[in-house]
Image (cartoon, rainbow, N blue to C red):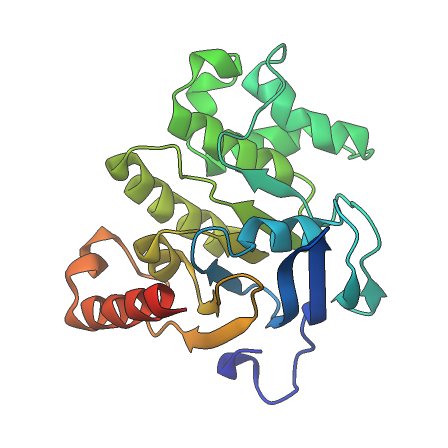
Length: 255
């Protein structure tokens, strides 16, 4: 729990305890412990192959845990749920539907009173109103990722899982996406677990960082990110940002 939440004033929305996962003789996760507070963005970093994406799949309920537990509030995670949608790199939309159709799909499927109004709200939030009738294949990569994140946020899930969501985009587009996502989360607060290999991305988006060791991985460091909601590309040159980035890079490389 973050300091801002107060001492035990707000229960952690997501709690992971002694989580373990192996594939045959390959031990991937070895006792992961995490707490994520409501509306917090936790960025997970670690060496390549340490099990970051495996952790996210377990949080999503897409794979069973070998030991330990994952809880959302008072409920133990036992399988997939629309309350924990995951967006991965190169996330796909329904190619036969327009952008509006994609954004209406979730609210319509869950019996929303006005799916069209829900889609309009998200089109405005993602600055894609002018592309409402365009199919996904006609959108740029950045637009598709914005739309994919908007699609899973349509039902206002309590937890959003992001697995390298901007990894396929060029550097300039990634920076624009970071600013866009921070703005969207300011308007639609959501608890987020972000897996990334990009330290800049982790520091621009995360409220806290969790650094994993090499496989079999455990949490070796938890770091509060001291930059506020006004973070932007100009933050990259801030001396405090540069110093923290160097520290995090050193920790990742030595994990």
